Image (tube, rainbow, N blue to C red; front, side, top):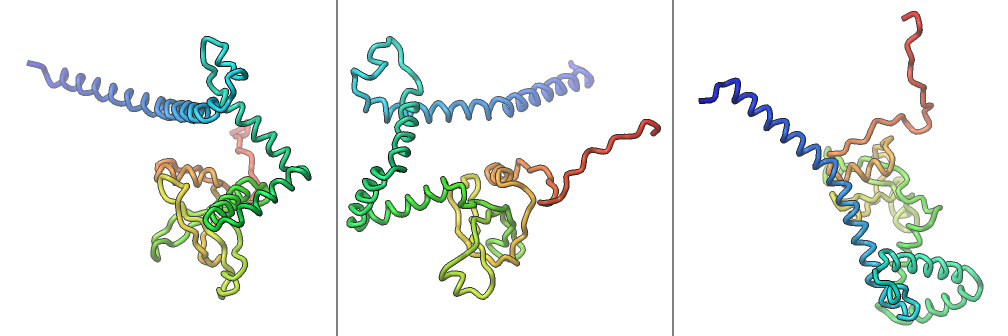
Length: 231
C-alpha cells in the first residue's frame, strides 16, 4: 500500500507534467497556427492563379515537382504592373472608362463604389485610420468597451449634432473585422496610451493578452535609474 509521501510525489510529478504540456502547447500553438494559415493562404492563391498560366509558360509543366508560392509571386508582379499602368495617363483613361461603364449598372455600381472606398481608405497613408485607442461606454452607461477613433465626423452628421463628434469603430471579439460605427462626442471618450496594435491584441485575445503600460503621448521616456556606486 503506497504511503502518503509516495502519493504526494506521484501527484507532484503529474502536476509538473501537466505544466510542461501546457507550456509546450502555449509555445507550439501560435507557431503552428501561423504556419498553417500562411500555407493555406499560399495554397489558395496558387490554386487561383496557377491554372491561369498557359501551360507553355508554366514552370510546373517542365519540372517534376510543384513550386509553392508561384501563384503568389505572379499575383504580386501582376498587381505591381497594374498599379504602374493605372498611375499613368493611359491607365487612368482606361480606368475612368471602366468606372463610367460600371456606373450604369445599378447593383454593380453600389458594390464597386463601396469596395473602392474601403480599399482606398485602408491603403491610403494619409487616411489616419485608427488614430487612437479609446474607451467608450457601450452598450450602456458604466460598461466600457475598447474602440478606435478613425477620424473626425464631418458633413451632415456633424452639422446635425450639437457637440464635436468623432467616428469611432467598435470591433467585436475575437473577430475585429466586424463591428459597429459609432458617432461619439469627444468629451465622452477616454483616450488610452496603448497603441493600436496593443488594442487589437487585447480585443482578439478577449482580454487575455494585457498590453504593457505606456507613458502618456508626448511624455519624455526617462532612462532607467541605476544605483550609485556608493549605495
